[in-house]
Length: 336
Image 1 (cartoon, rainbow, N blue to C red):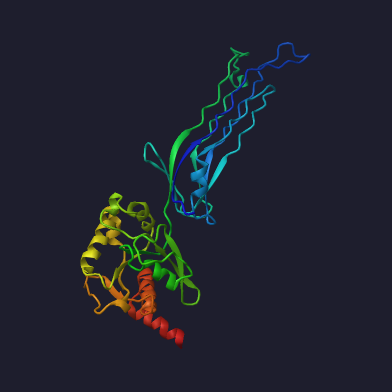
Image 2 (cartoon, helix red, strand yellow; image 1 turned 90 degrees about the vertical axis):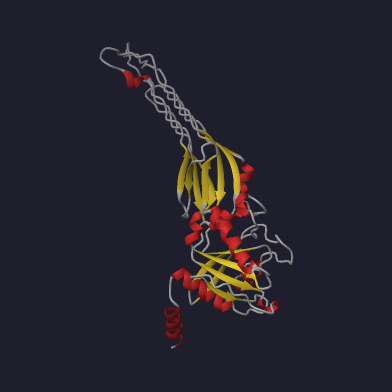
């Protein structure tokens, strides 16, 4: 099951108490202070793991608690430090405090770690407080408390290209046609209920990751339909592909709607490279043309595979920032 949102309670461990103790030896009738320090409480740490792609385990675990540090003892012995609790999460996980909304961690690389709840520091034993004027201190310091937090975990998937479109615009059909991904496909809206990722291979050893998210509707950035739940999965994409059905009676209106929903959700989408892709050309009597400045338009049919190679070439051009001439020269030299 794909889970990209979870609320979790975490609590780090309390530091162990320092103790009051004195040396008691037969040959030392008035032994000095020997109370040891407390051990450190366990911390809560999150760690990014490339092998994970869902927050499912975290969602159902619900809470994580680290153990307290051990108390000090006589002979200046320090209490045992408690082990840290490590929570593995998928790369792309963002963690923020539910109350303050402050982002505590954004894990973008494999094996990256962040301490989100620090274990309490151990207290000091009375052996630390002996002075010439007070050679037998009878006090110690208790360990510091741990941290308790209600956290929100959000997964924002990484992809090179995000497919954007109304429900049933042909996004899932396209990703299944050019990658090994096998999303659910049907002729009704909201077939896609979770993001689908696929890898598109080109050249000898090159590839890019394509993301298909559930279709957007008007008001998606406000939470209508399934929009706001999945719009965050487009935040890290490098290129946006706007998919519009060739049989759409108002393609310009559809493009402006999609564009508006994205930019109302995140202003940075305004500067994201994009491509307009008219889908289902095999069903159209006439191919639309929008003539949007600085935005290329292509036509495809995933059913007949018409235009799919062009789609990949255009995406590579946008990802690599290369001109048509540079791409043509590369292909020419490969053929030579």
